[in-house]
Length: 421
Ligand code: LLP
Image (cartoon, rainbow, N blue to C red; front, side, top):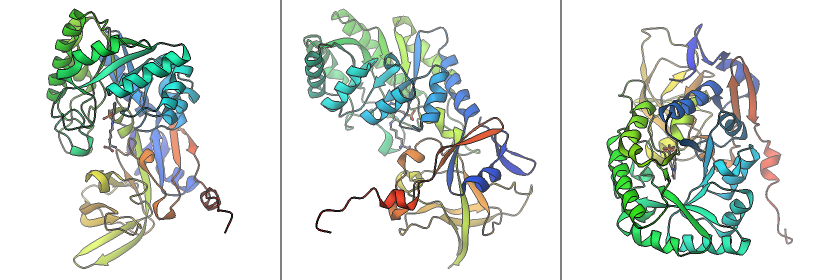
């Protein structure tokens, strides 16, 4: 459930008409709902009630300071994958002991930065990385808490570009080698092993792959404990999918996911961490865009928007579907017609939808891309020298620009000239 609903014939974000925001900030822009962000965070928190746990929001999904502060104030930890994310989390006031550092290629600078500012644990992805963390920790006179990310070789049954738990993927250490690698970790002076980490992919629409992976983690926990390791924490990653259309069957709910976690892992007495990103932010954000032109092509009508692939890359990159709805509520039963919905960027890949059935639209009309809160703004670029678009946050009847639209001078003046020009 989200808080983007039609009321009095116009789409509202909580209590604010979307058209009012468009008039104030111009289009295109991203728009987030505080109530939806908090609702989704709490669904996870409540799903794990009664179990020692921490929900670490995977901030790669949407990393604006205002979003991080909103979630941190509700008690969320953060899952970070770079120094930039780590520093953003710290800037939003998240204490180091609520920050988990994931990612396959942490550099020595990143490791030192997190050890200096405090970190709950590093999720280690390879032996060389493990050695680097130990080396940096020893140099700094510290001990780094770690888990090792295991690759359980489970098919997450999601888009190939976002599946991470098969042996062919670059992530984690093959689970069959885990005991050997944990033994190595125990022998390194700068490390303290605290648990196991697993993350098998994103936008999973069934619980079975998670369950298969978590059962393997349960077996491994017993083995590692028998080997003498202090396994007290299980980081189960993120990945629970969201409904991208209103019509299709909804993925499992956080409450069912939580129950499955308890059933599969509850007997181990471990602290549970999860790293959801998409489910917290995805349906908490929309991208609002305006129709620039209606163009009649051969056998098709193009709706040319002012938003483009550089603003929302998911359709071009993953063939992702986003519902696109008019900001003015269509008359019930209104006739629909097919449109190819495209942006102004100079590639045919800049196509959001082909033959999408929509009520008739006119130039100047506003449309909203639903489910754009996760992996939307964070994946945008300035391709075609288009400015990054603003982000706006609604809370009840208030809204605030949380990232302003830059100026063209901002963009041009970031470049520096060599002395010979
Ligand atoms: N933890 C780790 C280690 C991850 O790699 C990810 C996502 C998450 C947690 C959060 O997963 P989520 O709960 O959001 O599914 N750009 C793609 C998604 C990439 C996901 C990468 N890793 C998209 O737009 O679909």
